[in-house]
Image (cartoon, rainbow, N blue to C red; front, top):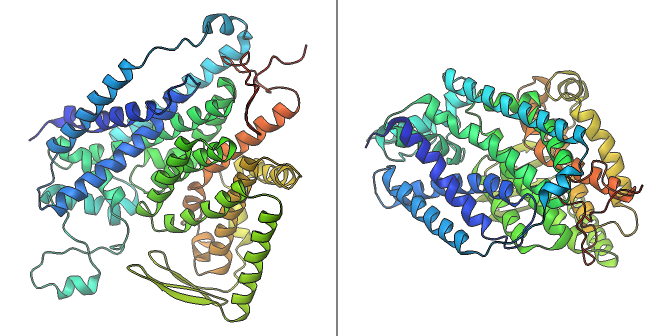
Length: 502
């Protein structure tokens, strides 16, 4: 069934609506930022749900199509909307009076930043609409599979070149990156099924939704954290104005934007859960962190970064010291004995030795030091990919280390700092100790891999800013809607709202 651009709109909008409504139902109490959070997280969750449905249809031997999945999401959206309407309305206070007490310059600046972001997203949307498929990886990997699946309406397998040559029936296909996860290709496939035929613009539109979802999720979590609307929007503007991130939206087709968004949304929820133990945020951490390996291979490694962050969030004092000491002692013993090697059922071999790292789904890397400092410096600090982000991040790391190692540091601060340091350590190992140093020296993948952590880095810096502002006597930029509300039973590290002195 051919529905053209109406079908594309339904394919992207109906699952988004269903995901947002059901996520919104989890928050029964009035809270700032819940709707942006639900919209941002709901889009990514629903798109990932679409890919699972397409896999399920193929596993059952059904021809890939648009009607069945869209009807299911439409029913979910109607059910979610009805449940939301049945919820009693809760009065949240006289927002008009609060806004009248807000200085006019703050409201003007908020409007200017919002307009800037809106115009920027419109510009990126036009780039997607006008440009044909452009990125190299989209040509060779992600869009190749999507187009073949779109033409055949089935998920024909992609195998290694050797298996493809050995296939007498010609029912398989091959590409250089045949072993890459299929999720991103399925995301590009879905709107083309609704369009009725392969269309590069339709295949690229989910990337625009991904950028918008990242922005909404970031803003919603920042507001739930206790940041004022202006502070939240300012940090969001800093994130969405980064040249390389915008490039990955305008030149849609790479997987890195999806991994950056999924990893970032998981990290935002991690800090919220570490602060107050909210089970809803814990569920979001679990869902989005586990999705990372299904987007790109390195997502399996980035998933492991959540483990130490979760542990330091829940352990303190002697238990934390015992864990740290035991980990160091175990690692030193294993290193002295030549490392460890074991098999993972259904996955492959794990080897960690002084001369080799091998991980299932990721690859095999020989370990030896490479002097990549000059290339890393130029790509992260000199070239125009990141504005001044890396300089500010360096200052934030020093600040975060000092704050996180002080006695009585809140759990969210320890968890966030450990995650950030773990991410940078993983990148250091990759670019300085393995053959992947060529990705830095040739300026190929270094910025794309760094991009995958950028949303998490920026949100972490926002939490540091808010923590410092509150410890100094109040929010640096007063909350536009909540500054007169204060909770006497807020957990350690939770935001409180009070009128600044004087």
